[in-house]
Amino acid sequence: MDAVRLTSRDLVFTGRFEAAAAPQTVAAFRRHMPFVSQVVHVRWSGEGVWVPLGDTQFGVGYENHTSHPAPGHILLYPGGISETEILIAYGGVDFSSKMGQLAGNHFITLTGGLERLAELGRRTLWEGAQPVRFEAG
Image 1 (cartoon, rainbow, N blue to C red):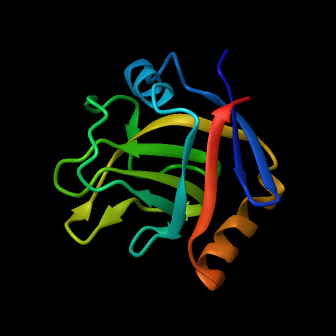
Image 2: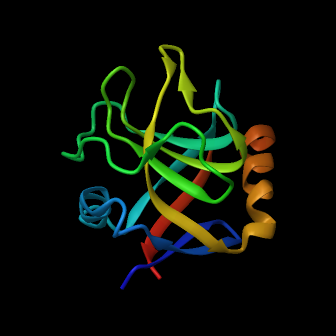
């Protein structure tokens, strides 16, 4: 039951939860599924899109955290020195905010549809916020 599906309009991506490496983050996120929001393009981090979540608390600390996710890696930053957020890497990322470098919990890895992942980034950069939906896959 580790399969996950991410959709944005006609773009469909499949992947898996990283339940062994980030069990608390995965469990907390699953309680919010289906998770529906919008992504905007990152400002400081490079080739990624993010879901700003403000003061939302998932009740988790750091686990399986990184500042350098690979394309297709999805991070949950649990808050602290910057706001809570979800980051989706579609290219090179050095995860940062105006407060400096951040590390987020790598809790989902996309494995299907990766050839269209850069299109999500392009649309978000040039067309503005894009809808996203995470659901069990």
